[in-house]
Image (tube, rainbow, N blue to C red):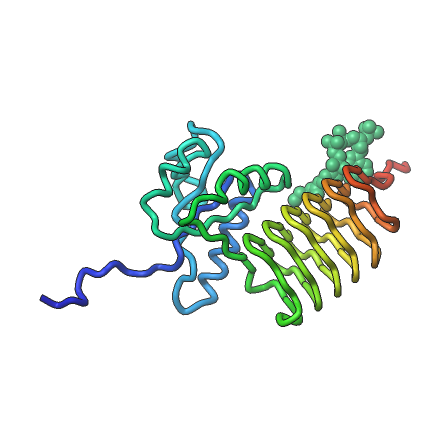
Length: 230
Ligand SMILES: CC(C)(COP(=O)(O)OP(=O)(O)OC[C@H]1O[C@@H](n2cnc3c(N)ncnc32)[C@H](O)[C@@H]1OP(=O)(O)O)[C@@H](O)C(=O)NCCC(=O)NCCS
């Protein structure tokens, strides 16, 4: 018998994506981009994890919703090693999921980085696990980032920025040099944070806001929205 026959093929790290909404589909696109850029697939997307049992079995982005939060523990038992991605847009929900699944020893949390994102100085940009860096983002140099952050399309993170855990940085946000962002912060799309500013834990910076002073914990910051002039 030929020992090389009938062996299990490796199709990349088996991976589950949490959530079924737009951002989960967009992160599936990033994973597809990564696979397309490599000569062999890096990840094998097994499917999505829904918060609702009724979604299980449905198809989104060409993959099945394979389980829900409730039966997740049972579902993952058959895997020796399984990657998990948590793209959700609400920091508190991401944190809750991580706290629930962190004890499962067969799970790993890859940093999903779009091939079109640019990390200008890889040796000085540190990051934990489970981060997602979407298309067109630029991270410059000497950046420290924790875990489970979502850096959405075309955002920029300047030199010496420090970013905590579970952050959500929506598209086109501009984080200047030396900014410190605590855990569970949401930066709205198109906002800009001036250099050296600290953004307190669990704060929300509204879409389009311009931040020029330190923000206390639990703040919601907005600028004046556009008004009809004529
Ligand atoms: C700031 C934010 C969190 C407030 O959400 P909310 O508490 O649900 O606020 P509401 O939508 O009920 O709006 C409350 C008031 O604030 C105003 N407002 C809301 N967001 C605003 C913003 N970003 N800038 C200026 N004004 C804003 C609304 O016009 C409304 O004003 P009114 O009371 O005079 O009618 C939210 O609007 C926001 O900007 N989230 C980020 C969105 C984002 O990044 N989207 C991209 C997803 S990829």
